[in-house]
Image 1 (cartoon, protein in one colour):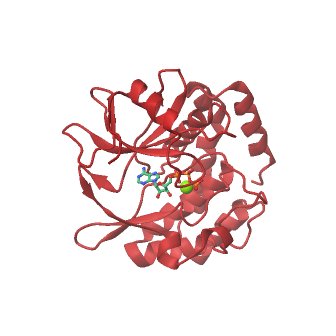
Image 2 (cartoon, rainbow, N blue to C red; image 1 turned 135 degrees about the vertical axis):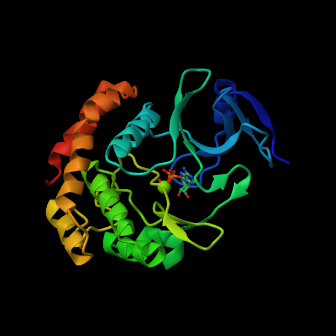
Length: 270
Ligand SMILES: Nc1ncnc2c1ncn2[C@@H]1O[C@H](COP(=O)(O)OP(=O)(O)OP(=O)(O)O)[C@@H](O)[C@H]1O
Ligand SMILES: [Mg+2]
C-alpha cells in the first residue's frame, strides 16, 4: 500500500518532493487531495475525506529553472485574461520555500470520475511522431460538441499557444470530457506554459505552419472552419499576453525569466 500523508500543504509538499514524485510527463507530479479552507494536503488516500478535492501538483524537474511553477501560474493568469477556460490553479509553497504548481482536477467531482479522452487517445495519434494540425482538433471538437463555439475554443487556444510560445502543444495536451448523458465538451485547457521543442516548432501545426505561425495562419483556419471574428480573438489573446511582464512579476517570476520569455515573444510573427 502507498504511504499516506496528511498535513499542512507546506509539510506534505516537502515530503512528496523528497520522494521524487512519479512522472507521467516531463515533470514529476503527484495526485493529492487538497482542502482550500484549511490549506491541508493529503496523499495516498483511496477516498478523499470531506472538504478535500483532487488536485495535481507539478514539481520542478532537475533541469528546470527554480521559478518554473511561477511561470506556469503566470500563464494560467494570462489564459484566464484571454478568456480561455481553465480549472483553478494555485501556487503552493514547500517548507523550504520552493513553489510548486497545483491544478484542480477537472476529471473528478468529489470522489467521482468524469470520463476523459485526449486528442492523442481519440485519434490514435502517437504524440511523439505526430503530424496533426489545429484543424484536426477543431474538426473533432465540432464532431463531439456539435456547436460552433467548440471550434472557437480551439482557435482561441491555438492563438494563445502561438503568441505565448507554448510549443509543446502535442496531442496529449488537448482533451474532452463526457458527462453521464454521453455529452462531450472540450476540457479546460492545461499544461499552458513557456515551452520549446527539440526542433523548436509547434507540436501541432497551424494551418500547415509549425515553425513560426502567426495571424495569417489563424485566419486561414478560421476561414476554413467558418469561425467568426478571428481578428477579435487574436486581439484579445495578444492583449492578455502583452501583460506578461506585470502578471509574471505578480506571480513571483524572476526578472531573468521575465526578460528571457519576453525576448522570445518579440521574435514571434504577428
Ligand atoms: N487540471 C487537470 N485536470 C485533470 N487532468 C489534468 C489536469 N492537468 C493536467 N492533467 C493531466 O495530467 C497530464 C500531465 O499534466 P501536464 O500536461 O500539465 O504535465 P507535463 O509534465 O507538463 O506534461 P508534458 O508531458 O506534456 O510535458 C495531462 O496530460 C493531463 O492528462
Ligand atoms: Mg502535458
